Picture 1: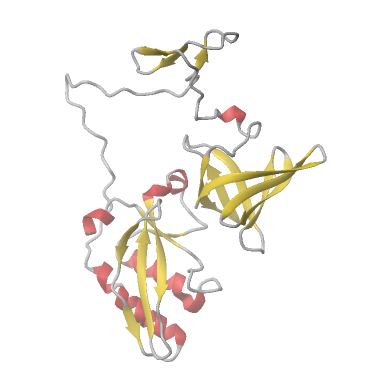
Picture 2: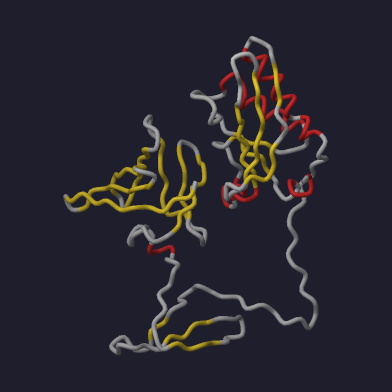
Length: 264
């Protein structure tokens, strides 16, 4: 398990764990960040990510505090999840019977950290696959101008696509629409069809597509799951309704509503 954690450069610490209603309740966020750094990890708050982690969210593991406390004892465990919300590691449960909350959570979290202290963690960047001399090279697909129609007026069109660095081509009798929108089209075309990944930034999130390009930046409000956004130069809002995300804005005096595919 320790070798699996070695694949990750950062531990991302929320300033408010799901178990609490306020930030750094009982100094839990401060404590968890300190203990990870003390044990050889690089822990950062979710609103202060370094540039390489912003560009590649999968460099880090998000830590959450699971609180199963009862009336007479405080019980906590720490859970580490990757950028796809897959659980990578779970500590043993730490317990405390101290009546004062701050001291109780400190003792319980320290006890849970016993699982982490013995891991001998050391970040090891993933190495690119070594290519042997004479080995057949894999095909690299370029998405730049990937679909070119040779005859716009015919109902059936010939499509030419560059598929390798050596100008290898293939032909199809039907047009193949590109699934990637080029950067200069961002803001001019609908963002509905793309899966957007939410990356934490100061006061909100930036939504990036698979290229990756920043498509939208949304700003937190005082209301949960409602964000402000500048879309096509117009003020709008992004909000969650019935487990779906929507973008609402006004264009030429008409209200527009589009569903977004966001992965947090």
